[in-house]
Length: 305
Length: 285
Image 1: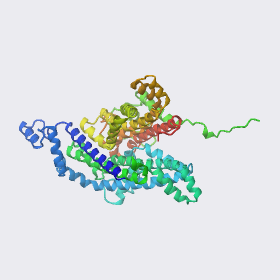
Image 2: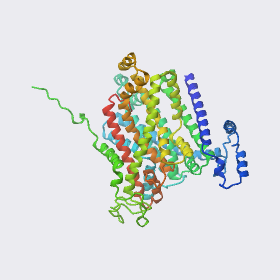
Image 3: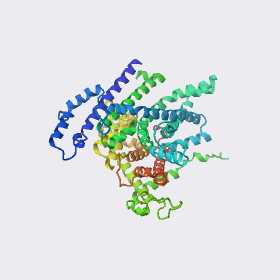
Image 4: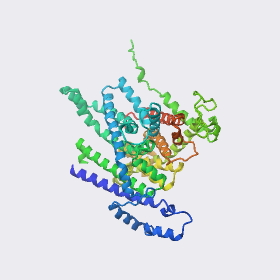
């Protein structure tokens, strides 16, 4: 078990290193940052001074090492647009995104699992049919359109919720529900099919013959065995969540890292883009690591891989 | 007396008429788009701006689904948007399909170190969520239709690689492969003439189901400003442009979104049907 965890941690670290390398070298391909900072007819001296100041006159390898050294101190450069340290900027917006993401994930998981399990237990019932249609539609809906439709319906026509900004639970409802609904569709579908498969197994029949109460059969025996593919799906959903927050934050003007990333991109603010990519990858890799470790607890077979 | 065998009605294979109809319509607009648009989707007519669909007050049958902020006919733009989506999707799937299938075939067939390296590479790629890779690539290449195709192609090959690798791994042990090797069949010929045709079924299903992902991610990137640029007629763009007018011109955002939904739904349903027909062992989920 410990060997497995160590292997996964090593894997995560190597991934982060690879991402860092890719991000750094890709940024350098973007053209001369100095040329973007000064006007086209600037003095040659000014251009040279700026180039020297940012250390851009040195070889790429040295630039990379300098970058790593400052990164270790938490210094990722200053945002061109906001004139603040890039890392601090991204971190300051993160709580807002976290609030959104956790709420959305909660909605998607709780309702997704419940509807999925309920559908699996009574296949082809009215409830199940409804669930299936809902999943189909949910997987085909683009998140930004759902967001705009919700805005239109609940925000404008009914005027129940504010359509932008962050503050109260009312502000949180629409953005979180939009992301959550689409995730929910996929989770429901997979939970349903995984549970149906698990419920057909021999050990379930055995448990029933033994007289195990139905709710234990479903919630413990069947669910435990169905949870591996469901967990895989949830970590894929998390990846979708990152995309989702970028889109939804932009639409609802939610002050999170996603909206920051798009604003930085449109302003060609490289330091912020860089930090955002590294930060988001770090979060994603960490979540995957935790899911991998969770796998090992749930399915003992995996510990010996 | 002969025993009567009653087949329940739903045992017969159902052809999803609606789904295939939607897909057919989609393809139709791609081929015949320019001929069936009622108006020029790029023609600006500020006198006719922000007209509602024909069933609302202020609308006319000239513009069945209304016009946008610059007076361009929405129905025509939807049809052109379908063409754009289709073309971008086809090229993107070609890219990710080719990369994925090749890597999957090589990885599965040769196994060993090559397999490990390729799988590690796949893991690395998978840890970059799509939007992150998209932002990176678009930062370097600048937003455009070509960039979107590259981004969507380059982020989507993993599924193909994994599934093809799985298929190859199980096919490798089959009798016909071993016999071909004994007969002296070279590696390349084995891969392309023997293994590849057998994974075609799975591949068709995969491609059909992947269309949905491709269409949605293209629209999302375009919506955010990372993709196809104006004045192209793209569904994502139409939604982005219509957002500002949402309080009084609901049709500018509703119809493009519905178009996306129907296109993806059609492809997904068709993919599901194909999977039922071509993949009885449910290898693909």
